[in-house]
Structure formats: C-alpha cells, structure tokens
Image 1 (cartoon, rainbow, N blue to C red):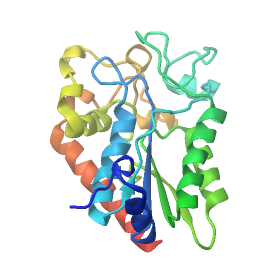
Image 2: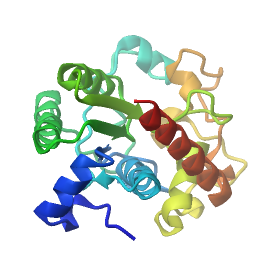
Image 3: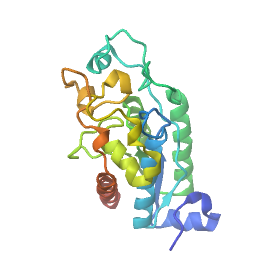
Image 4: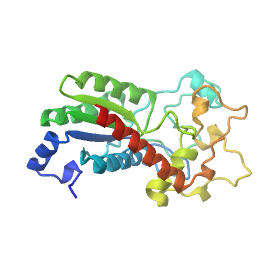
Length: 256
C-alpha cells in the first residue's frame, strides 16, 4: 500500500502525490485540558486519526499533526452560560479548578504556523488542501477560514474542515460524552472514567472543566451540570463518529 505520511516520503514520491490525487491533509488541534479522565492531546489525535483514514481512502498525503491550538478570553455571556459570575478572567477551558493549564498559542503564532504549511503545500503543487480542525474554538475557526479564503484560487482549493458533524445525534460539548467516546475509539488507554466522581454526583461545569455544547450555545440547564455524561462514553460511539466524519470529509474532497 502506498505511503500517506509526508514525513516518510522522498521528493519524487511527494511530487507524484501532488500530481495525483493532489490532496494534502493538515491535522490541527491543541494541547488542552479535557477533564481528569482524559489526555490533553485529544483534539489533535482526533484530527490526526481522521487524516489517516481519509488519506488511506484517497491515497492522499497527510502532514504531521499540529498541537498548536489557540484560544481567547471568555466573554461575560459565555462565562455566565457556564455558571460563572461573568467577571472571571478565563481563557479557553483553563478554569480555576483545573490542576494544570492548557498550552494555548497566541493567535498570531497559530496563524503564522498554519499559513507556512499551507504555502508549502501550495508551492509543491497540491491542488486540494484540507485543514482538519479537531479543536474547534471560535478564534481558531476564524483564522482557518481566513487562510482558506486567502490561499484558494482557480487552481488550488483550501478547505477548513471541522471534525464534528452539525447533524450529530450527540451533543458537541467539550470532553463530555462524544469527545470521550472519540478518544476511546482512537486509544482507550488515554481514557480513565474511574477518575470521574461516582455516578450519583452531578458534573458541574465550573468544577470539572468541561461542559455540554448546548451551554455554550446559550441553553445550559438550571444547575450548570453536564447532561451528555462522559461516564456514558463508549468505544463504539467513538468509532461510529470517526467513520461518519471521515466519510463526510471524503465526500467534500471528491466534490472540489
């Protein structure tokens, strides 16, 4: 089977891939707090696994994953949706109760690194460049959208692809049911649900450092506690998601 990792390829192999199928995948994520029960590299490992599946299916190329997620300070409204007073100084998910901080890169550094990789791929001759964003984050999405628009032209298409489906039957929260399941589907050894409180204890956003997506959307429950519980996560749910999101990405690439 043909190699798909750019780092393993000789120049002649890269040039052949750039000629056909001319698809390069750039997985991007973060090193971020994902609760006491999960590894901090989850976002990037998620995007990297999608890149591997898609590259194998299309005989494409994928670059080494970038653990360089960016975040900005939470707004008053966002903080209140999570159960804070709204006056706290919090960036991303670095809540006061967390035992360690996340590694967030300044937006300008994040932009510069990703831009350098896009320019390289375009210079080599790839005509379809897909940025796989496993972190999400409003600022990260904004920057990747800007770069995709800036470097797309008649010859080259650059696409910012979020590794979550908007029509997923699972809430797109942070480190809750879906993300925990995804990590279990990638590497179950990185998840230890026994680190979470016993089932009778509600998981409060401000105390555990993770939350349902509906809270960020402005619809938290009255107790500001997790409804899409990571204690219900399964490897099967994670595998189902990885298959679905990879198929969605492949479909987009084929239509470019």
